[in-house]
Structures are given as C-alpha cells and as structure tokens.
Image (cartoon, rainbow, N blue to C red; front, side, top):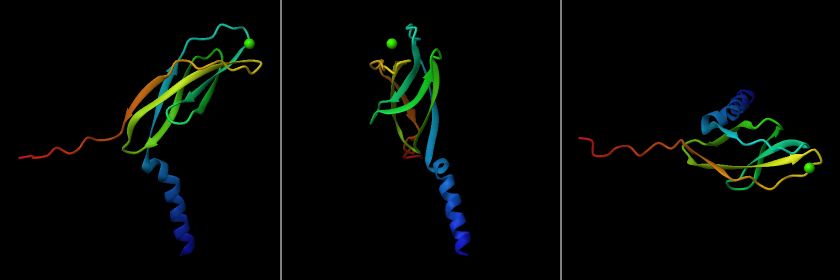
Length: 113
Ligand SMILES: [Ca+2]
C-alpha cells in the first residue's frame, strides 16, 4: 500500500513540469565576429538574475533557447550575448533583446444576456 502511494507520488512529481508549466523556444541570431581566434558565443538570460543559458560554437550564429515559465503567466524574457575567444577572453555584452510571452487568458466576459 505504502509502496503504491510512493509510486503515485513519484509519477505525479515526474509529470509536474508538464502540468504546471509552459514551455516555448526563443530563436536568437546575431552577426558573426570576425576575429580569427573566436571560440564561442554565450547567451545569457538577463531578465531577473543573469543566467548563462547556452554556449554556441563559432561560427554558428543562431540558437533556440528553451524557456520554462509558470502556467498562466505573462511577461518578457530578455537576453544578451557575449563572444569568447580561444584564450577565454569574454567580450562585453551585446544589446539586449526582449521576447514577450503570454499564457494568461483574459477574464471571462461579463453581463452576457
Ligand atoms: Ca583574442
């Protein structure tokens, strides 16, 4: 009996991200650097705390960034990119881009008659 309950809880926990979150992918692109010792680009998410999302090997200049947000939420995710050379030197930040998302439904209509 206890084992069955634990299995049910484990199954619910595994499903939780699907049930309580929304996911989408943000497509980003930028101009390639021209230095000869380029290694990679780093994509940071910059709304809220700064978080490294993904590194992209030069000369690739596009990436899809998976984003997970709370179900029913609405807002903006922001990103900045940096360039990194083979010696590990990291550039300053690129400009910031914003992508809106909207999983919040409007209020129900009222006064239907
Ligand atoms: Ca260099």
